[in-house]
Image (cartoon, rainbow, N blue to C red):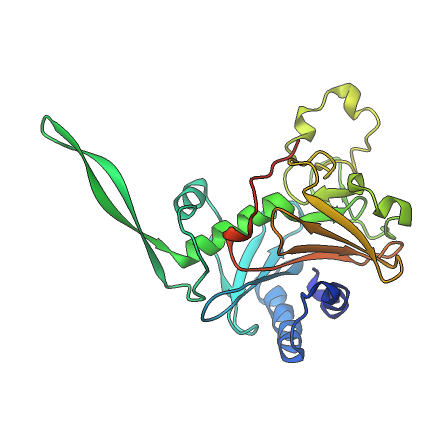
Amino acid sequence: MDSESLLLSLELASGSGQGLSPDRRASLLTSLLLVKRDYRYDRVLFWGRILGLVADYYIAQGLGPDQLGERKSLYSLNCMEWSLLPPATEEMVTQTSVVKGRFMGDPSHEYEHVEMQRMTEGDRTYEDEVVIQIKEESRLVSVIDQIDKAVAIIPRGAFFKTPFGPVHVNRTFEGLTLADAKKLTSYFHFTEPIELKNKSLLEKADLDPSLDFLDNLEHDIPKGSWSVQMERGNALVVLRSLLWPGLTFFHAPRTKNHGYIYVGTDSNDKLGTGQRG
């Protein structure tokens, strides 16, 4: 959810139990404006909160001129002081996938993982136990990356792609119609497309390349991994991921207001392995 409309967005999402205390809201409102200024981001999103045993991680993301470009993730333990996280790598995601259980809430905490590795000594080959240290900060980066790729979503038309490639906020977007707001085809994964690249020219014939440049949710696997509900007398549509139950997306039809927030424990929130069709 955009930091510039944070209070309204938190209010719209509050019906899903994603609310924050007045003190936290006030701190976020001030500190995220400073993050935007100090890091010179075009936009700053409040991403959500990952719950830990001793403290919670509040997550924000900074975006540059290209809205689909690299997102810089930051975390805070108090909603006032923010630390920049490194980008996720495949090696990091693989290494941290073995960690189970809740986050501690301490970025310097190290998990110990024991695995068997094949060792060679002269002509002799044998297996031995090796203890691997995994930092909680690396795990935090990996979980944010997995959630972004799986369930970060936007409504169709909220962004447009220029002929030269960069993606920008569509200032003329006035929201989905009530009918369209109920359809999964009206929502896109806010990450690089996978399914779209495999479509034939015939399948792309009816698509608007400036608006339909991302994968929509219709063919996500497993089927039924998204729930769509109308709330507040059809004034609000809420999408929830059944794969990552902490994720809530909201949109007020016929308005510009939309966003998503994640509030959950960790990667163990994930109920299954989903993919795009």
